[in-house]
Length: 518
Image (cartoon, rainbow, N blue to C red; front, side, top):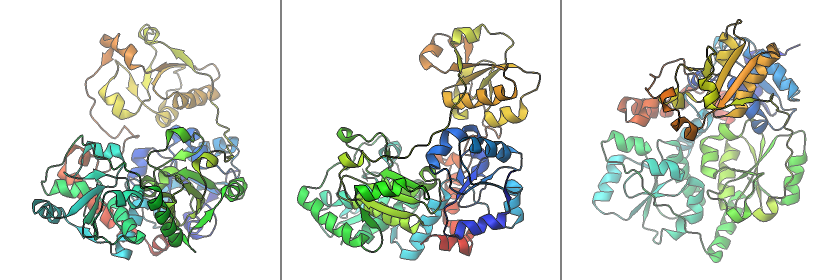
């Protein structure tokens, strides 16, 4: 019997002391159009592929919700098959949440974005406007602009004269760049969150220089009609010397005292082995040393872990172990922020070489049916068999096989005609194709599914079979994030709406949601 639970009960569970995974099974477009603040997105179309990475503990308390369309009941059964034991379904899905008068938040990475706004309000993080920064540049003031985003984002667009230094690296590397306590430091990102967190990180670390967050980041710069650079490669890759690292270690150890526990290898292993809690381990360095490649341990730079926490940590109030090269600065400052986001945080005081020997518990039960792969030539000769393209809609819209129709697992589950018993899937993600094969063959073992694994090289030899006319974007592409998406294409109205959305997040939070953060 399936366990249905009321929205008010789930709201209480979010605020209690126990771990909780609150999972939105709807597709990305549906999630970003409105979802509960602390829910995470694991769309039905890729659920089994991602759930065991995000929810490693099989006894964790789970609440599933959908559009009140039966998807939760399907996933309930699949999750049971994956050995999850403590599963509930939100009664009446997203409608049940709304009817209980609880707010829905649009957009993505909402907990982290809300947290950033609360940080600015709580600490009164100093900021500087685009106009003020431009004036300082023209007057050749003693300033340095640090872009706290990953290099790929910086490379696409950046403030003229800025240097890329991802957020968690800033307190670790800043001494290699700033030689005077009179130099003013401006931290920017694309919008607001990483500018605020980056600036406040330096302030909390105790730097003597004046530090500012660039108000509204590159979007604010763009809205003031200032020129943005593109393709810049200036990256702060200098590492402090051994004496400086010792000084930094002493400083961070003092900051962590009575706030975040510093543990050794054995204590970390004990936490991982505890079956009653969910524990994540992250390497928070921006560029992991290739000689010490840690294939088992996930590398998520600290700034991104704070910026998009719900992308990497699927369980509220869970345990998070962080490490870096042994300086403890990057792991420690990241841990201090995650602790304020209501996670139980630890920093390993050990070398990455030893940390790689941690024995992670991987209970992966996901398996799909065998896939019948075909070549493009076979596909070309297959007449009267429907062709469905399940790649990301952004790829499909640019280039696709003629007469193919875009779809995904949700649409196939809800809309596939009963009289169709043979189809061809076009995919560049074989595990996602495997889910659909399994679904269809569970209904009818004789169902014939052939899969073409998209190959750009092969496509070039059959170009007369390919359609490159751009398909118009519309609501049928349920895997697309429509939330102010035109800001990426220089649309000023969308840019303004995005910044307003960030600043309004706190207004939309209720008291329980605000005090969840510490």
